[in-house]
Amino acid sequence: MSDVLVIILACGAVNYILRVVPFVFTIGEDLPPYLKRFLDYMPIAALGALILPGIITSFPDNPAAGIAGAAAAALTAWIAGGLILPVFASIGTAWVVLQYFH
Amino acid sequence: MKTENRNKSFNDFVSGAGSAVPIFIGYFTTSVAFGILALSAGLTPLQAVIFSMTNLTGAAQFMAINLIGSGAVMGEIVVSVLLMNLRYFIMSASLARKLGLNNNIDKAVISFAVTDEVFSVASLKPGDVSNFFMYGLQITSWAGWAAGTLAGVTMGAFLPRSLQDAMSGALFALFAALLVPEIKKGYRAAFISVSAGLLNTLLYYVWHISAGWSIVISMLVITAGAAAVFREDENSGDQSVEEAV
Image (cartoon, rainbow over all chains, first blue to last red):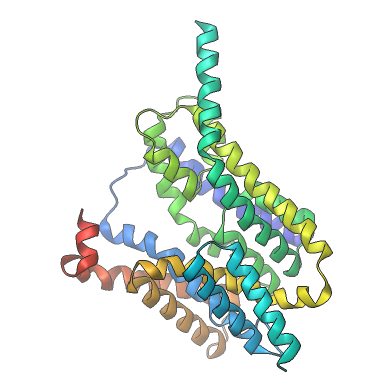
Protein backbone atom coordinates (compact mmCIF):
# COMPACT_ATOMS: atom_id res chain seq x y z
CA MET A 1 0.00 0.00 0.00
CA SER A 2 1.28 3.45 -0.88
CA ASP A 3 1.97 6.02 1.84
CA VAL A 4 -0.81 8.25 0.54
CA LEU A 5 -3.35 5.44 0.77
CA VAL A 6 -2.28 4.74 4.37
CA ILE A 7 -2.80 8.43 5.21
CA ILE A 8 -6.23 8.41 3.54
CA LEU A 9 -7.33 5.33 5.49
CA ALA A 10 -5.93 6.71 8.76
CA CYS A 11 -7.93 9.91 8.22
CA GLY A 12 -10.97 7.75 7.49
CA ALA A 13 -10.43 5.87 10.75
CA VAL A 14 -10.16 9.13 12.72
CA ASN A 15 -13.34 10.47 11.17
CA TYR A 16 -15.20 7.23 11.86
CA ILE A 17 -14.07 7.05 15.48
CA LEU A 18 -15.25 10.64 16.05
CA ARG A 19 -18.63 9.74 14.61
CA VAL A 20 -19.23 6.25 16.01
CA VAL A 21 -18.13 6.61 19.65
CA PRO A 22 -21.12 8.79 20.69
CA PHE A 23 -23.46 6.20 19.15
CA VAL A 24 -21.90 3.39 21.20
CA PHE A 25 -21.49 5.23 24.49
CA THR A 26 -23.96 7.74 25.85
CA ILE A 27 -22.40 11.19 25.88
CA GLY A 28 -23.86 14.10 27.79
CA GLU A 29 -25.23 16.74 25.47
CA ASP A 30 -24.76 19.76 27.72
CA LEU A 31 -21.30 21.07 27.01
CA PRO A 32 -19.67 23.84 29.00
CA PRO A 33 -20.01 27.10 26.98
CA TYR A 34 -16.22 27.40 26.66
CA LEU A 35 -15.96 23.97 25.02
CA LYS A 36 -18.86 24.77 22.73
CA ARG A 37 -17.15 27.95 21.51
CA PHE A 38 -13.89 26.03 21.18
CA LEU A 39 -15.56 23.56 18.81
CA ASP A 40 -17.33 26.33 16.88
CA TYR A 41 -14.15 28.31 16.32
CA MET A 42 -11.83 25.41 15.46
CA PRO A 43 -12.74 25.09 11.75
CA ILE A 44 -12.50 28.88 11.31
CA ALA A 45 -9.01 28.99 12.82
CA ALA A 46 -8.07 26.01 10.66
CA LEU A 47 -9.11 27.82 7.48
CA GLY A 48 -7.09 30.90 8.46
CA ALA A 49 -4.00 28.80 9.08
CA LEU A 50 -4.54 26.96 5.82
CA ILE A 51 -4.72 30.18 3.77
CA LEU A 52 -1.71 31.90 5.35
CA PRO A 53 1.08 31.53 4.42
CA GLY A 54 0.20 28.81 1.87
CA ILE A 55 -1.36 31.27 -0.54
CA ILE A 56 1.93 33.13 -0.94
CA THR A 57 3.86 30.00 -1.87
CA SER A 58 1.19 28.33 -4.04
CA PHE A 59 2.87 29.82 -7.13
CA PRO A 60 6.56 29.99 -6.10
CA ASP A 61 7.54 31.94 -9.24
CA ASN A 62 4.59 34.29 -9.22
CA PRO A 63 3.00 34.84 -5.79
CA ALA A 64 0.67 37.47 -7.30
CA ALA A 65 -1.18 34.71 -9.16
CA GLY A 66 -2.09 32.97 -5.89
CA ILE A 67 -3.11 36.16 -4.12
CA ALA A 68 -5.17 37.43 -7.08
CA GLY A 69 -6.81 34.03 -7.46
CA ALA A 70 -7.83 33.79 -3.81
CA ALA A 71 -9.06 37.40 -3.86
CA ALA A 72 -11.23 36.61 -6.89
CA ALA A 73 -12.57 33.54 -5.09
CA ALA A 74 -13.37 35.50 -1.92
CA LEU A 75 -15.13 38.19 -3.93
CA THR A 76 -17.16 35.64 -5.90
CA ALA A 77 -18.07 33.78 -2.71
CA TRP A 78 -19.13 37.05 -1.08
CA ILE A 79 -21.40 38.03 -3.98
CA ALA A 80 -22.65 34.73 -5.38
CA GLY A 81 -21.92 32.21 -2.61
CA GLY A 82 -21.18 28.55 -3.25
CA LEU A 83 -17.81 26.92 -3.75
CA ILE A 84 -17.48 25.74 -7.32
CA LEU A 85 -17.98 29.19 -8.91
CA PRO A 86 -15.37 30.87 -6.65
CA VAL A 87 -12.92 28.06 -7.45
CA PHE A 88 -13.42 28.54 -11.20
CA ALA A 89 -13.08 32.33 -10.77
CA SER A 90 -9.75 31.82 -9.00
CA ILE A 91 -8.43 29.41 -11.63
CA GLY A 92 -9.39 31.89 -14.39
CA THR A 93 -7.80 34.82 -12.57
CA ALA A 94 -4.61 32.90 -11.79
CA TRP A 95 -4.46 31.80 -15.43
CA VAL A 96 -4.68 35.40 -16.65
CA VAL A 97 -1.99 36.54 -14.21
CA LEU A 98 0.32 33.66 -15.21
CA GLN A 99 -0.15 34.37 -18.92
CA TYR A 100 0.18 38.14 -18.93
CA PHE A 101 1.99 39.26 -15.77
CA HIS A 102 5.40 37.84 -15.11
CA MET B 1 -48.77 -6.26 9.23
CA LYS B 2 -45.46 -7.25 7.79
CA THR B 3 -46.30 -5.57 4.45
CA GLU B 4 -47.27 -2.38 6.26
CA ASN B 5 -43.90 -2.26 8.00
CA ARG B 6 -42.14 -2.80 4.74
CA ASN B 7 -44.14 0.00 3.13
CA LYS B 8 -43.29 2.36 5.97
CA SER B 9 -39.59 1.49 5.69
CA PHE B 10 -39.70 2.08 1.95
CA ASN B 11 -41.57 5.37 2.32
CA ASP B 12 -39.13 6.56 4.99
CA PHE B 13 -36.19 5.67 2.75
CA VAL B 14 -37.67 7.59 -0.18
CA SER B 15 -38.49 10.53 2.06
CA GLY B 16 -34.90 10.59 3.37
CA ALA B 17 -33.50 10.37 -0.14
CA GLY B 18 -35.78 13.22 -1.21
CA SER B 19 -34.56 15.41 1.65
CA ALA B 20 -31.02 14.77 0.48
CA VAL B 21 -31.46 16.09 -3.07
CA PRO B 22 -30.15 19.60 -2.23
CA ILE B 23 -27.28 17.96 -0.31
CA PHE B 24 -26.52 15.76 -3.32
CA ILE B 25 -26.23 18.80 -5.59
CA GLY B 26 -24.07 20.75 -3.14
CA TYR B 27 -21.83 17.77 -2.41
CA PHE B 28 -21.48 16.83 -6.07
CA THR B 29 -20.27 20.25 -7.20
CA THR B 30 -17.90 20.68 -4.24
CA SER B 31 -16.58 17.18 -4.74
CA VAL B 32 -15.85 17.86 -8.42
CA ALA B 33 -13.51 20.57 -7.15
CA PHE B 34 -12.00 18.07 -4.71
CA GLY B 35 -11.34 15.57 -7.50
CA ILE B 36 -9.62 18.16 -9.68
CA LEU B 37 -7.55 19.58 -6.82
CA ALA B 38 -6.58 16.14 -5.49
CA LEU B 39 -4.93 15.41 -8.83
CA SER B 40 -2.99 18.67 -8.78
CA ALA B 41 -1.85 17.82 -5.22
CA GLY B 42 -0.37 14.58 -6.55
CA LEU B 43 -2.99 11.96 -5.67
CA THR B 44 -3.96 9.33 -8.21
CA PRO B 45 -7.60 9.34 -9.43
CA LEU B 46 -8.26 6.12 -7.50
CA GLN B 47 -6.80 7.55 -4.27
CA ALA B 48 -9.00 10.64 -4.62
CA VAL B 49 -12.15 8.55 -5.06
CA ILE B 50 -11.22 6.24 -2.15
CA PHE B 51 -10.62 9.34 -0.03
CA SER B 52 -14.13 10.64 -0.66
CA MET B 53 -15.77 7.23 -0.24
CA THR B 54 -14.07 6.46 3.08
CA ASN B 55 -13.94 9.92 4.69
CA LEU B 56 -17.05 11.82 3.55
CA THR B 57 -15.86 15.09 5.01
CA GLY B 58 -15.51 18.47 3.34
CA ALA B 59 -12.88 20.98 4.37
CA ALA B 60 -10.74 18.37 6.17
CA GLN B 61 -10.27 16.44 2.92
CA PHE B 62 -9.11 19.61 1.19
CA MET B 63 -6.78 20.30 4.10
CA ALA B 64 -5.38 16.77 3.93
CA ILE B 65 -4.55 16.95 0.21
CA ASN B 66 -2.89 20.31 0.78
CA LEU B 67 -0.71 18.74 3.49
CA ILE B 68 -0.02 15.63 1.39
CA GLY B 69 1.04 17.91 -1.46
CA SER B 70 3.42 19.82 0.80
CA GLY B 71 5.00 16.58 2.00
CA ALA B 72 3.68 16.50 5.57
CA VAL B 73 3.98 13.24 7.55
CA MET B 74 0.99 11.14 8.59
CA GLY B 75 0.91 12.35 12.21
CA GLU B 76 0.56 15.99 11.17
CA ILE B 77 -2.25 15.21 8.76
CA VAL B 78 -4.20 12.92 11.08
CA VAL B 79 -4.05 15.34 14.04
CA SER B 80 -5.11 18.27 11.83
CA VAL B 81 -8.09 16.28 10.54
CA LEU B 82 -8.98 15.19 14.07
CA LEU B 83 -9.01 18.79 15.34
CA MET B 84 -10.93 20.17 12.40
CA ASN B 85 -13.58 17.46 12.73
CA LEU B 86 -13.99 17.32 16.52
CA ARG B 87 -17.45 18.78 15.91
CA TYR B 88 -18.62 15.43 14.49
CA PHE B 89 -18.29 14.00 17.98
CA ILE B 90 -20.82 16.51 19.29
CA MET B 91 -23.13 16.12 16.31
CA SER B 92 -23.11 12.33 16.69
CA ALA B 93 -23.84 12.64 20.42
CA SER B 94 -26.87 14.78 19.69
CA LEU B 95 -28.03 12.62 16.78
CA ALA B 96 -27.62 9.36 18.72
CA ARG B 97 -29.99 10.75 21.31
CA LYS B 98 -32.57 11.84 18.75
CA LEU B 99 -32.50 8.57 16.76
CA GLY B 100 -32.44 6.21 19.75
CA LEU B 101 -31.17 3.28 17.65
CA ASN B 102 -31.12 -0.20 19.22
CA ASN B 103 -29.57 -2.19 16.40
CA ASN B 104 -25.76 -2.24 16.35
CA ILE B 105 -25.59 -2.49 12.57
CA ASP B 106 -27.74 0.63 12.25
CA LYS B 107 -25.44 2.43 14.70
CA ALA B 108 -22.30 1.35 12.86
CA VAL B 109 -23.60 2.35 9.41
CA ILE B 110 -25.52 5.53 10.24
CA SER B 111 -22.67 6.98 12.31
CA PHE B 112 -20.31 6.56 9.34
CA ALA B 113 -22.13 9.24 7.35
CA VAL B 114 -22.76 11.95 9.95
CA THR B 115 -21.91 15.24 8.22
CA ASP B 116 -22.78 18.88 8.92
CA GLU B 117 -25.60 18.80 6.38
CA VAL B 118 -26.98 15.34 7.29
CA PHE B 119 -26.93 16.38 10.94
CA SER B 120 -28.84 19.58 10.18
CA VAL B 121 -31.56 17.85 8.17
CA ALA B 122 -32.05 15.01 10.67
CA SER B 123 -31.96 17.31 13.72
CA LEU B 124 -34.43 19.81 12.28
CA LYS B 125 -36.91 17.13 11.16
CA PRO B 126 -39.78 17.21 13.65
CA GLY B 127 -40.79 14.03 15.49
CA ASP B 128 -39.21 10.60 15.24
CA VAL B 129 -36.56 10.00 12.62
CA SER B 130 -36.39 6.35 11.54
CA ASN B 131 -33.31 4.37 10.56
CA PHE B 132 -34.66 4.02 7.01
CA PHE B 133 -35.06 7.78 6.67
CA MET B 134 -31.40 8.07 7.70
CA TYR B 135 -30.34 5.44 5.16
CA GLY B 136 -32.12 7.31 2.36
CA LEU B 137 -30.68 10.63 3.46
CA GLN B 138 -27.14 9.37 3.96
CA ILE B 139 -26.78 7.05 0.97
CA THR B 140 -27.90 9.88 -1.32
CA SER B 141 -25.49 12.34 0.31
CA TRP B 142 -22.62 9.86 0.18
CA ALA B 143 -23.37 9.08 -3.48
CA GLY B 144 -23.19 12.80 -4.32
CA TRP B 145 -19.81 13.16 -2.64
CA ALA B 146 -18.33 10.00 -4.21
CA ALA B 147 -19.76 10.64 -7.70
CA GLY B 148 -18.54 14.25 -7.65
CA THR B 149 -14.95 13.17 -6.98
CA LEU B 150 -15.19 10.62 -9.77
CA ALA B 151 -16.41 13.34 -12.14
CA GLY B 152 -13.66 15.69 -10.92
CA VAL B 153 -10.78 13.29 -11.51
CA THR B 154 -12.23 12.47 -14.94
CA MET B 155 -12.45 16.17 -15.85
CA GLY B 156 -9.01 16.83 -14.40
CA ALA B 157 -7.42 14.31 -16.74
CA PHE B 158 -8.58 16.28 -19.80
CA LEU B 159 -7.63 19.79 -18.69
CA PRO B 160 -4.95 21.59 -20.77
CA ARG B 161 -1.52 22.07 -19.22
CA SER B 162 -1.72 25.86 -18.75
CA LEU B 163 -5.03 25.48 -16.92
CA GLN B 164 -3.57 22.78 -14.68
CA ASP B 165 -0.74 25.17 -13.79
CA ALA B 166 -3.29 27.84 -12.94
CA MET B 167 -4.91 25.39 -10.52
CA SER B 168 -1.99 25.32 -8.05
CA GLY B 169 -3.69 28.04 -6.04
CA ALA B 170 -7.26 26.80 -6.38
CA LEU B 171 -7.13 25.00 -3.04
CA PHE B 172 -6.47 28.28 -1.25
CA ALA B 173 -9.26 29.88 -3.22
CA LEU B 174 -11.52 27.16 -1.92
CA PHE B 175 -10.45 27.77 1.67
CA ALA B 176 -11.20 31.47 1.15
CA ALA B 177 -14.62 30.62 -0.28
CA LEU B 178 -15.36 28.39 2.74
CA LEU B 179 -14.33 31.18 5.09
CA VAL B 180 -16.33 34.03 3.50
CA PRO B 181 -19.79 32.93 4.76
CA GLU B 182 -18.35 32.69 8.30
CA ILE B 183 -16.87 36.20 8.07
CA LYS B 184 -20.18 37.53 6.78
CA LYS B 185 -21.78 36.38 10.05
CA GLY B 186 -19.61 38.63 12.20
CA TYR B 187 -16.22 40.05 13.03
CA ARG B 188 -15.20 37.12 15.22
CA ALA B 189 -14.54 34.79 12.31
CA ALA B 190 -12.41 37.44 10.57
CA PHE B 191 -10.40 38.01 13.75
CA ILE B 192 -9.94 34.28 14.46
CA SER B 193 -8.96 33.30 10.92
CA VAL B 194 -6.53 36.19 10.40
CA SER B 195 -4.91 35.57 13.80
CA ALA B 196 -4.49 31.88 13.05
CA GLY B 197 -3.02 32.72 9.64
CA LEU B 198 -0.54 35.21 11.09
CA LEU B 199 0.54 32.84 13.87
CA ASN B 200 0.97 30.05 11.35
CA THR B 201 3.10 32.31 9.13
CA LEU B 202 5.24 33.21 12.13
CA LEU B 203 5.67 29.59 13.27
CA TYR B 204 6.54 28.44 9.76
CA TYR B 205 8.93 31.19 8.68
CA VAL B 206 10.47 32.38 11.94
CA TRP B 207 10.61 29.21 14.02
CA HIS B 208 10.77 26.83 11.05
CA ILE B 209 8.15 24.42 12.39
CA SER B 210 6.94 21.99 9.72
CA ALA B 211 3.78 22.97 7.81
CA GLY B 212 1.51 20.36 9.40
CA TRP B 213 2.46 20.93 13.03
CA SER B 214 2.48 24.72 12.67
CA ILE B 215 -1.13 24.49 11.45
CA VAL B 216 -2.04 22.25 14.41
CA ILE B 217 -0.41 24.64 16.91
CA SER B 218 -2.03 27.69 15.30
CA MET B 219 -5.47 26.08 15.39
CA LEU B 220 -5.17 25.10 19.05
CA VAL B 221 -3.66 28.34 20.35
CA ILE B 222 -5.97 30.72 18.49
CA THR B 223 -9.11 28.69 19.16
CA ALA B 224 -8.34 28.32 22.86
CA GLY B 225 -7.59 32.05 23.08
CA ALA B 226 -10.65 33.14 21.11
CA ALA B 227 -13.01 30.89 23.08
CA ALA B 228 -11.72 32.56 26.26
CA VAL B 229 -11.56 36.16 24.98
CA PHE B 230 -14.94 36.33 23.27
CA ARG B 231 -16.78 35.29 26.41
CA GLU B 232 -17.29 38.91 27.53
CA ASP B 233 -19.12 39.73 24.32
CA GLU B 234 -21.94 37.44 25.24
CA ASN B 235 -23.29 39.98 27.72
CA SER B 236 -23.12 42.97 25.38
CA GLY B 237 -23.58 43.77 21.72
CA ASP B 238 -25.91 42.45 19.05
CA GLN B 239 -24.43 39.00 18.73
CA SER B 240 -24.96 38.19 22.39
CA VAL B 241 -28.72 38.52 22.03
CA GLU B 242 -28.86 35.90 19.32
CA GLU B 243 -26.54 33.58 21.17
CA ALA B 244 -28.40 33.89 24.42
CA VAL B 245 -31.70 32.84 22.87
